[in-house]
Amino acid sequence: MLTRLEVHGFKNLVDVQVEFGAFTCIAGANGVGKSNVFDAIEFLSHLASEPLADAARRVRGPSGERGGDPRDLFWDGYRDHGRAMRFAVEMLVPSDVLDDLGESAAATWTFLRYELELGYLRPSAGGRGELLLTKEDLLRADHVDRLGLWSAEQFMNSVLHGRPSRDPLLSTHHVDESNLAYSKADVGSRGRFPRAAVRTARTVLSSISSGDEPTLLAARREMQSWRRLALEPSALRAPDSFSEPRELGVDGRHLAATLHRIANDGDPDAAYARIADRLSDLAGVDVDEIGVDPDEAREVFTLFLTERSGLRLPARALSEGTLRFLALCVLLEDPTVTGLLCMEEPENGIHPANLPAMVNLVRELAVDTSRPPGDDNPFRQVIVNTHSPTVVQLCGPDELLFAERIRQQAPDGTATTGLALTPFQGTRRAWPGEAAATLADLVPYLAAPPDAHLQLPTDLTL
Image (cartoon, rainbow, N blue to C red; front, side, top):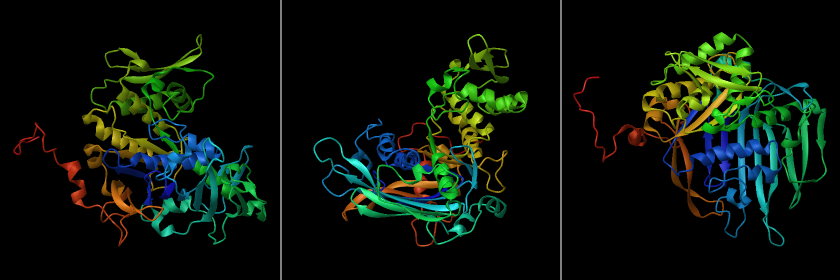
Protein backbone atom coordinates (compact mmCIF):
# COMPACT_ATOMS: atom_id res chain seq x y z
CA MET A 1 0.00 0.00 0.00
CA LEU A 2 1.39 3.37 -1.06
CA THR A 3 0.89 5.67 1.95
CA ARG A 4 3.02 8.66 0.90
CA LEU A 5 4.42 9.92 -2.41
CA GLU A 6 7.00 12.66 -2.90
CA VAL A 7 7.95 13.77 -6.42
CA HIS A 8 10.31 16.55 -7.49
CA GLY A 9 11.09 17.47 -11.09
CA PHE A 10 8.97 14.86 -12.88
CA LYS A 11 6.84 16.47 -15.62
CA ASN A 12 4.84 19.23 -13.89
CA LEU A 13 5.23 17.58 -10.48
CA VAL A 14 7.74 20.18 -9.38
CA ASP A 15 7.27 19.63 -5.66
CA VAL A 16 4.47 17.22 -4.73
CA GLN A 17 4.10 15.61 -1.32
CA VAL A 18 0.89 13.68 -0.74
CA GLU A 19 -0.51 10.97 1.51
CA PHE A 20 -2.89 8.24 0.39
CA GLY A 21 -5.29 5.99 2.23
CA ALA A 22 -7.05 2.82 1.15
CA PHE A 23 -9.33 4.80 -1.19
CA THR A 24 -8.43 8.26 -2.52
CA CYS A 25 -10.15 10.45 -5.11
CA ILE A 26 -8.10 13.21 -6.79
CA ALA A 27 -10.40 15.94 -8.15
CA GLY A 28 -9.31 18.69 -10.50
CA ALA A 29 -9.82 20.38 -13.83
CA ASN A 30 -8.57 19.04 -17.13
CA GLY A 31 -4.88 19.66 -17.79
CA VAL A 32 -3.73 20.41 -14.23
CA GLY A 33 -1.61 17.25 -14.07
CA LYS A 34 -3.76 14.65 -12.30
CA SER A 35 -2.65 11.99 -14.78
CA ASN A 36 1.00 12.86 -14.15
CA VAL A 37 0.58 11.53 -10.60
CA PHE A 38 -0.45 8.20 -12.09
CA ASP A 39 2.47 8.43 -14.54
CA ALA A 40 4.88 8.82 -11.62
CA ILE A 41 3.41 5.81 -9.78
CA GLU A 42 3.42 3.72 -12.95
CA PHE A 43 7.02 4.74 -13.69
CA LEU A 44 8.16 3.64 -10.24
CA SER A 45 6.38 0.33 -10.70
CA HIS A 46 8.13 -0.29 -14.04
CA LEU A 47 11.48 0.67 -12.50
CA ALA A 48 11.03 -2.17 -10.01
CA SER A 49 11.16 -4.66 -12.89
CA GLU A 50 12.83 -3.15 -15.93
CA PRO A 51 15.93 -1.20 -17.00
CA LEU A 52 15.64 2.59 -16.78
CA ALA A 53 15.31 3.03 -20.55
CA ASP A 54 12.50 0.46 -20.85
CA ALA A 55 10.61 1.90 -17.88
CA ALA A 56 10.85 5.39 -19.38
CA ARG A 57 9.43 4.17 -22.68
CA ARG A 58 6.44 2.70 -20.86
CA VAL A 59 5.37 6.09 -19.49
CA ARG A 60 2.77 8.10 -21.36
CA GLY A 61 4.41 10.87 -23.41
CA PRO A 62 3.16 14.41 -24.04
CA SER A 63 0.98 13.24 -26.94
CA GLY A 64 -0.38 10.28 -25.00
CA GLU A 65 1.94 7.88 -26.84
CA ARG A 66 4.64 5.75 -25.23
CA GLY A 67 8.28 5.52 -26.20
CA GLY A 68 9.24 9.20 -26.28
CA ASP A 69 12.52 10.93 -25.49
CA PRO A 70 13.61 10.51 -21.83
CA ARG A 71 13.68 14.30 -21.54
CA ASP A 72 9.86 14.13 -21.71
CA LEU A 73 9.91 12.95 -18.10
CA PHE A 74 11.81 15.91 -16.64
CA TRP A 75 10.42 19.27 -15.70
CA ASP A 76 11.34 21.59 -18.59
CA GLY A 77 13.43 18.73 -19.93
CA TYR A 78 14.37 20.24 -23.30
CA ARG A 79 16.06 23.38 -22.02
CA ASP A 80 19.84 23.29 -21.77
CA HIS A 81 20.28 22.87 -18.03
CA GLY A 82 20.91 20.11 -15.53
CA ARG A 83 18.10 17.61 -15.26
CA ALA A 84 17.18 15.61 -12.19
CA MET A 85 14.09 14.08 -10.70
CA ARG A 86 13.62 12.72 -7.22
CA PHE A 87 11.07 10.30 -5.84
CA ALA A 88 10.30 9.00 -2.37
CA VAL A 89 7.55 6.60 -1.38
CA GLU A 90 6.45 5.24 1.96
CA MET A 91 4.63 1.95 1.72
CA LEU A 92 3.21 -0.94 3.66
CA VAL A 93 4.63 -4.07 2.06
CA PRO A 94 3.44 -7.69 2.32
CA SER A 95 4.99 -9.53 5.23
CA ASP A 96 5.33 -12.76 3.24
CA VAL A 97 6.43 -12.87 -0.40
CA LEU A 98 7.55 -15.43 -2.95
CA ASP A 99 10.92 -15.21 -4.65
CA ASP A 100 11.47 -16.01 -8.33
CA LEU A 101 11.79 -19.71 -7.50
CA GLY A 102 8.52 -19.80 -5.60
CA GLU A 103 10.14 -19.94 -2.16
CA SER A 104 8.54 -17.98 0.67
CA ALA A 105 10.37 -15.15 2.46
CA ALA A 106 9.37 -12.97 5.42
CA ALA A 107 10.14 -9.23 5.53
CA THR A 108 11.92 -7.99 8.64
CA TRP A 109 9.89 -4.73 8.71
CA THR A 110 6.79 -3.97 6.65
CA PHE A 111 6.67 -0.14 6.69
CA LEU A 112 9.38 1.11 4.33
CA ARG A 113 10.63 4.29 2.71
CA TYR A 114 12.21 4.09 -0.75
CA GLU A 115 14.15 7.06 -2.16
CA LEU A 116 15.30 7.38 -5.76
CA GLU A 117 17.08 10.03 -7.83
CA LEU A 118 17.51 9.96 -11.60
CA GLY A 119 19.64 12.18 -13.80
CA TYR A 120 20.23 12.58 -17.51
CA LEU A 121 23.35 11.74 -19.49
CA ARG A 122 23.63 13.75 -22.70
CA PRO A 123 24.46 11.82 -25.87
CA SER A 124 28.09 12.02 -26.88
CA ALA A 125 27.41 12.32 -30.61
CA GLY A 126 23.83 12.65 -31.77
CA GLY A 127 20.99 10.35 -30.81
CA ARG A 128 19.13 10.40 -27.55
CA GLY A 129 20.51 10.76 -24.09
CA GLU A 130 19.76 8.28 -21.35
CA LEU A 131 18.53 8.15 -17.79
CA LEU A 132 21.04 7.56 -14.99
CA LEU A 133 20.49 6.29 -11.49
CA THR A 134 22.15 8.77 -9.13
CA LYS A 135 20.78 7.64 -5.76
CA GLU A 136 18.77 4.71 -4.40
CA ASP A 137 18.05 4.05 -0.72
CA LEU A 138 15.62 1.80 1.14
CA LEU A 139 14.94 2.63 4.77
CA ARG A 140 12.60 1.53 7.51
CA ALA A 141 9.88 4.19 7.70
CA ASP A 142 9.02 5.49 11.15
CA HIS A 143 5.89 7.67 10.74
CA VAL A 144 3.67 4.90 12.10
CA ASP A 145 1.51 7.47 13.92
CA ARG A 146 0.22 8.77 10.58
CA LEU A 147 -1.01 5.33 9.56
CA GLY A 148 -3.18 5.12 12.65
CA LEU A 149 -5.19 8.14 11.54
CA TRP A 150 -6.97 6.21 8.80
CA SER A 151 -6.87 2.63 10.03
CA ALA A 152 -8.09 0.70 13.05
CA GLU A 153 -5.70 -0.85 15.57
CA GLN A 154 -6.83 -4.33 14.50
CA PHE A 155 -5.84 -3.58 10.90
CA MET A 156 -2.50 -2.06 11.87
CA ASN A 157 -1.58 -5.00 14.08
CA SER A 158 -2.18 -7.34 11.16
CA VAL A 159 -0.09 -5.47 8.56
CA LEU A 160 2.72 -3.87 10.59
CA HIS A 161 5.39 -6.42 11.43
CA GLY A 162 9.01 -6.49 12.42
CA ARG A 163 11.42 -4.30 14.26
CA PRO A 164 12.25 -0.71 13.22
CA SER A 165 15.87 0.35 12.86
CA ARG A 166 17.79 3.38 11.63
CA ASP A 167 20.16 1.26 9.54
CA PRO A 168 19.42 1.49 5.81
CA LEU A 169 18.44 -1.72 4.05
CA LEU A 170 19.90 -0.43 0.78
CA SER A 171 22.22 2.53 0.25
CA THR A 172 24.28 3.89 -2.63
CA HIS A 173 27.08 6.34 -3.26
CA HIS A 174 28.73 7.74 -6.39
CA VAL A 175 31.84 6.33 -7.98
CA ASP A 176 31.71 8.47 -11.12
CA GLU A 177 29.09 10.05 -13.38
CA SER A 178 27.56 6.80 -14.57
CA ASN A 179 28.45 4.30 -11.83
CA LEU A 180 27.38 3.73 -8.24
CA ALA A 181 28.57 1.54 -5.44
CA TYR A 182 25.88 0.09 -3.21
CA SER A 183 25.49 -1.94 -0.05
CA LYS A 184 22.60 -4.02 1.21
CA ALA A 185 21.76 -5.02 4.75
CA ASP A 186 18.90 -7.39 5.52
CA VAL A 187 18.48 -10.14 8.09
CA GLY A 188 18.11 -12.71 5.35
CA SER A 189 21.31 -11.63 3.58
CA ARG A 190 23.44 -12.35 6.67
CA GLY A 191 24.84 -8.87 7.13
CA ARG A 192 25.94 -5.94 5.02
CA PHE A 193 27.57 -6.57 1.68
CA PRO A 194 29.33 -3.67 -0.07
CA ARG A 195 29.44 -4.11 -3.83
CA ALA A 196 31.77 -2.81 -6.47
CA ALA A 197 30.78 -0.04 -8.84
CA VAL A 198 27.86 -0.96 -11.08
CA ARG A 199 26.54 0.60 -14.26
CA THR A 200 23.41 2.52 -13.34
CA ALA A 201 21.24 1.23 -16.18
CA ARG A 202 18.62 -0.12 -13.78
CA THR A 203 17.69 0.16 -10.13
CA VAL A 204 19.30 -2.16 -7.63
CA LEU A 205 15.84 -3.07 -6.32
CA SER A 206 14.85 -4.40 -9.76
CA SER A 207 17.62 -7.02 -9.51
CA ILE A 208 16.40 -8.54 -6.23
CA SER A 209 14.99 -12.00 -6.91
CA SER A 210 16.03 -14.11 -3.93
CA GLY A 211 14.48 -14.64 -0.53
CA ASP A 212 17.96 -14.11 0.94
CA GLU A 213 17.04 -10.41 0.94
CA PRO A 214 13.41 -10.68 2.07
CA THR A 215 12.65 -7.05 2.92
CA LEU A 216 14.12 -5.73 -0.33
CA LEU A 217 12.17 -8.40 -2.17
CA ALA A 218 8.96 -7.38 -0.36
CA ALA A 219 9.52 -3.75 -1.40
CA ARG A 220 10.03 -4.81 -5.00
CA ARG A 221 6.92 -7.01 -4.99
CA GLU A 222 4.83 -4.19 -3.54
CA MET A 223 5.95 -1.73 -6.22
CA GLN A 224 5.42 -4.31 -8.95
CA SER A 225 1.80 -4.60 -7.80
CA TRP A 226 1.04 -0.95 -8.60
CA ARG A 227 -0.94 -0.86 -11.84
CA ARG A 228 -2.98 1.56 -13.87
CA LEU A 229 -6.36 0.29 -15.05
CA ALA A 230 -7.42 1.56 -18.46
CA LEU A 231 -10.39 -0.63 -19.36
CA GLU A 232 -10.88 -0.72 -23.13
CA PRO A 233 -14.24 -1.86 -24.61
CA SER A 234 -12.57 -3.85 -27.41
CA ALA A 235 -10.49 -5.79 -24.87
CA LEU A 236 -13.46 -6.34 -22.56
CA ARG A 237 -15.58 -7.70 -25.41
CA ALA A 238 -13.01 -10.18 -26.70
CA PRO A 239 -13.51 -13.92 -26.06
CA ASP A 240 -10.58 -15.76 -24.50
CA SER A 241 -8.92 -18.93 -25.68
CA PHE A 242 -8.32 -21.72 -23.18
CA SER A 243 -4.56 -21.12 -23.42
CA GLU A 244 -4.65 -17.41 -22.48
CA PRO A 245 -4.03 -16.02 -18.98
CA ARG A 246 -6.92 -16.14 -16.53
CA GLU A 247 -6.10 -12.84 -14.89
CA LEU A 248 -7.73 -9.54 -15.85
CA GLY A 249 -5.35 -7.36 -17.85
CA VAL A 250 -4.97 -3.64 -17.17
CA ASP A 251 -6.99 -2.99 -20.34
CA GLY A 252 -9.71 -5.47 -19.33
CA ARG A 253 -8.52 -8.30 -21.53
CA HIS A 254 -9.27 -11.86 -20.35
CA LEU A 255 -12.49 -10.83 -18.61
CA ALA A 256 -14.32 -14.03 -19.55
CA ALA A 257 -11.42 -16.35 -18.61
CA THR A 258 -10.89 -14.53 -15.30
CA LEU A 259 -14.56 -14.77 -14.33
CA HIS A 260 -14.63 -18.46 -15.23
CA ARG A 261 -11.57 -19.10 -13.04
CA ILE A 262 -12.99 -17.16 -10.07
CA ALA A 263 -16.36 -18.88 -10.31
CA ASN A 264 -14.86 -22.35 -10.49
CA ASP A 265 -12.47 -21.73 -7.60
CA GLY A 266 -15.53 -21.84 -5.35
CA ASP A 267 -19.29 -22.06 -5.83
CA PRO A 268 -19.93 -21.00 -9.47
CA ASP A 269 -23.65 -20.34 -8.98
CA ALA A 270 -22.99 -18.14 -5.94
CA ALA A 271 -20.22 -16.16 -7.68
CA TYR A 272 -22.29 -15.53 -10.79
CA ALA A 273 -25.30 -14.58 -8.64
CA ARG A 274 -23.29 -12.00 -6.67
CA ILE A 275 -22.09 -10.32 -9.86
CA ALA A 276 -25.56 -10.39 -11.42
CA ASP A 277 -26.94 -8.82 -8.25
CA ARG A 278 -24.32 -6.06 -8.49
CA LEU A 279 -25.17 -5.39 -12.12
CA SER A 280 -28.84 -5.10 -11.23
CA ASP A 281 -27.93 -1.93 -9.29
CA LEU A 282 -27.45 -0.20 -12.66
CA ALA A 283 -30.45 1.62 -14.05
CA GLY A 284 -31.25 0.41 -17.55
CA VAL A 285 -29.49 -2.96 -17.14
CA ASP A 286 -32.11 -5.71 -17.02
CA VAL A 287 -30.04 -8.65 -15.81
CA ASP A 288 -31.31 -12.01 -14.64
CA GLU A 289 -28.07 -13.97 -14.64
CA ILE A 290 -24.52 -13.87 -15.90
CA GLY A 291 -22.15 -16.67 -16.79
CA VAL A 292 -19.23 -17.87 -18.90
CA ASP A 293 -19.62 -20.61 -21.49
CA PRO A 294 -16.54 -22.72 -22.31
CA ASP A 295 -16.78 -23.73 -25.96
CA GLU A 296 -14.88 -27.05 -26.07
CA ALA A 297 -14.88 -27.21 -29.86
CA ARG A 298 -13.42 -23.75 -30.42
CA GLU A 299 -11.55 -23.75 -27.07
CA VAL A 300 -12.75 -20.28 -26.10
CA PHE A 301 -14.54 -18.73 -23.14
CA THR A 302 -17.46 -16.39 -23.92
CA LEU A 303 -19.21 -14.23 -21.34
CA PHE A 304 -23.01 -14.01 -21.56
CA LEU A 305 -25.61 -11.84 -19.81
CA THR A 306 -29.20 -13.08 -19.72
CA GLU A 307 -31.98 -10.53 -19.31
CA ARG A 308 -35.21 -11.21 -17.40
CA SER A 309 -37.00 -11.48 -20.73
CA GLY A 310 -34.81 -14.47 -21.55
CA LEU A 311 -32.72 -12.61 -24.14
CA ARG A 312 -29.12 -13.87 -23.95
CA LEU A 313 -26.42 -11.35 -24.87
CA PRO A 314 -22.69 -11.98 -25.40
CA ALA A 315 -20.15 -9.51 -24.01
CA ARG A 316 -19.71 -7.89 -27.42
CA ALA A 317 -23.38 -6.77 -27.32
CA LEU A 318 -23.08 -4.95 -23.97
CA SER A 319 -22.55 -1.21 -23.57
CA GLU A 320 -19.15 0.24 -22.64
CA GLY A 321 -20.40 1.39 -19.25
CA THR A 322 -21.89 -2.01 -18.43
CA LEU A 323 -18.66 -3.77 -19.41
CA ARG A 324 -16.49 -1.48 -17.28
CA PHE A 325 -18.80 -1.95 -14.30
CA LEU A 326 -18.77 -5.72 -14.88
CA ALA A 327 -14.95 -5.79 -14.98
CA LEU A 328 -14.78 -4.04 -11.60
CA CYS A 329 -17.32 -6.51 -10.20
CA VAL A 330 -15.02 -9.33 -11.32
CA LEU A 331 -12.03 -7.64 -9.66
CA LEU A 332 -14.05 -7.33 -6.45
CA GLU A 333 -14.60 -11.10 -6.50
CA ASP A 334 -10.91 -11.90 -7.07
CA PRO A 335 -8.90 -12.19 -3.81
CA THR A 336 -5.68 -12.71 -5.79
CA VAL A 337 -5.74 -9.07 -6.98
CA THR A 338 -3.86 -7.02 -4.40
CA GLY A 339 -1.71 -3.90 -4.51
CA LEU A 340 -2.55 -0.48 -5.91
CA LEU A 341 -5.08 0.18 -8.67
CA CYS A 342 -5.00 3.62 -10.32
CA MET A 343 -8.11 4.50 -12.33
CA GLU A 344 -8.68 7.47 -14.61
CA GLU A 345 -12.18 8.95 -14.49
CA PRO A 346 -14.21 5.84 -13.54
CA GLU A 347 -17.37 7.78 -14.41
CA ASN A 348 -16.64 7.55 -18.16
CA GLY A 349 -19.46 5.77 -20.01
CA ILE A 350 -21.65 5.63 -16.89
CA HIS A 351 -25.15 7.13 -16.85
CA PRO A 352 -25.50 9.83 -14.13
CA ALA A 353 -28.11 7.73 -12.33
CA ASN A 354 -25.55 4.92 -12.02
CA LEU A 355 -22.69 6.96 -10.62
CA PRO A 356 -23.54 6.17 -6.96
CA ALA A 357 -23.33 2.44 -7.75
CA MET A 358 -20.01 2.95 -9.56
CA VAL A 359 -18.44 5.00 -6.76
CA ASN A 360 -19.59 2.50 -4.13
CA LEU A 361 -18.13 -0.35 -6.19
CA VAL A 362 -14.77 1.38 -6.63
CA ARG A 363 -14.64 2.19 -2.93
CA GLU A 364 -15.41 -1.42 -2.01
CA LEU A 365 -12.48 -2.59 -4.14
CA ALA A 366 -10.18 -1.06 -1.52
CA VAL A 367 -9.31 -2.91 1.66
CA ASP A 368 -11.53 -2.24 4.66
CA THR A 369 -9.10 -0.77 7.19
CA SER A 370 -11.45 -1.37 10.10
CA ARG A 371 -10.55 -5.07 10.07
CA PRO A 372 -7.58 -7.29 9.13
CA PRO A 373 -6.99 -8.08 5.45
CA GLY A 374 -7.62 -11.59 4.19
CA ASP A 375 -9.33 -13.53 1.40
CA ASP A 376 -12.59 -11.79 2.22
CA ASN A 377 -10.83 -8.40 2.54
CA PRO A 378 -7.94 -8.32 0.00
CA PHE A 379 -5.05 -5.97 0.76
CA ARG A 380 -5.94 -3.65 -2.11
CA GLN A 381 -5.69 0.11 -2.56
CA VAL A 382 -7.54 2.33 -5.05
CA ILE A 383 -6.71 5.84 -6.29
CA VAL A 384 -9.00 7.50 -8.85
CA ASN A 385 -8.96 10.88 -10.50
CA THR A 386 -11.99 12.79 -11.71
CA HIS A 387 -13.43 16.14 -12.71
CA SER A 388 -17.02 14.95 -12.24
CA PRO A 389 -19.05 17.03 -9.74
CA THR A 390 -21.21 13.99 -8.96
CA VAL A 391 -18.23 11.77 -8.12
CA VAL A 392 -16.80 14.48 -5.86
CA GLN A 393 -20.11 14.83 -4.06
CA LEU A 394 -20.30 11.07 -3.53
CA CYS A 395 -16.86 10.96 -1.86
CA GLY A 396 -16.26 11.71 1.78
CA PRO A 397 -14.06 14.67 2.80
CA ASP A 398 -11.34 12.28 4.06
CA GLU A 399 -11.21 10.59 0.67
CA LEU A 400 -10.69 13.76 -1.41
CA LEU A 401 -7.58 15.53 -2.67
CA PHE A 402 -7.92 18.68 -4.78
CA ALA A 403 -5.54 19.12 -7.71
CA GLU A 404 -4.61 22.66 -8.73
CA ARG A 405 -1.76 24.61 -10.26
CA ILE A 406 0.22 26.83 -7.90
CA ARG A 407 3.40 28.90 -8.06
CA GLN A 408 6.40 26.87 -6.90
CA GLN A 409 10.18 27.04 -7.01
CA ALA A 410 11.55 25.05 -9.93
CA PRO A 411 14.59 22.76 -9.64
CA ASP A 412 16.78 25.50 -11.16
CA GLY A 413 15.62 28.02 -8.56
CA THR A 414 13.28 30.00 -10.80
CA ALA A 415 9.55 30.45 -10.24
CA THR A 416 7.24 28.13 -12.15
CA THR A 417 3.78 26.61 -12.02
CA GLY A 418 3.39 23.08 -10.71
CA LEU A 419 0.77 20.70 -9.39
CA ALA A 420 -0.36 20.70 -5.77
CA LEU A 421 -2.59 18.06 -4.19
CA THR A 422 -4.45 19.57 -1.27
CA PRO A 423 -6.52 17.71 1.36
CA PHE A 424 -9.79 19.08 2.67
CA GLN A 425 -9.54 21.13 5.86
CA GLY A 426 -10.22 19.28 9.09
CA THR A 427 -9.45 15.86 7.64
CA ARG A 428 -6.70 13.43 8.64
CA ARG A 429 -4.37 14.58 5.85
CA ALA A 430 -4.67 18.28 6.69
CA TRP A 431 -1.71 18.82 9.00
CA PRO A 432 -1.35 22.07 10.99
CA GLY A 433 0.49 24.76 9.07
CA GLU A 434 0.00 23.07 5.69
CA ALA A 435 -2.33 24.15 2.89
CA ALA A 436 -5.85 22.74 2.93
CA ALA A 437 -8.87 23.06 0.67
CA THR A 438 -11.97 24.86 1.93
CA LEU A 439 -15.64 24.95 0.99
CA ALA A 440 -14.76 27.61 -1.60
CA ASP A 441 -12.79 24.96 -3.51
CA LEU A 442 -15.92 22.83 -3.66
CA VAL A 443 -18.05 25.48 -5.38
CA PRO A 444 -17.28 24.29 -8.96
CA TYR A 445 -18.47 20.81 -7.96
CA LEU A 446 -21.66 21.94 -6.20
CA ALA A 447 -23.03 24.86 -8.20
CA ALA A 448 -24.72 24.79 -11.60
CA PRO A 449 -22.66 26.47 -14.36
CA PRO A 450 -23.49 30.15 -14.97
CA ASP A 451 -24.90 29.47 -18.45
CA ALA A 452 -27.03 26.46 -17.46
CA HIS A 453 -30.39 26.43 -19.27
CA LEU A 454 -31.98 23.86 -16.98
CA GLN A 455 -32.46 24.67 -13.32
CA LEU A 456 -34.47 22.77 -10.72
CA PRO A 457 -37.24 24.94 -9.25
CA THR A 458 -36.40 25.94 -5.70
CA ASP A 459 -39.80 24.74 -4.47
CA LEU A 460 -39.55 21.33 -6.19
CA THR A 461 -40.27 18.40 -3.88
CA LEU A 462 -38.61 15.16 -4.91
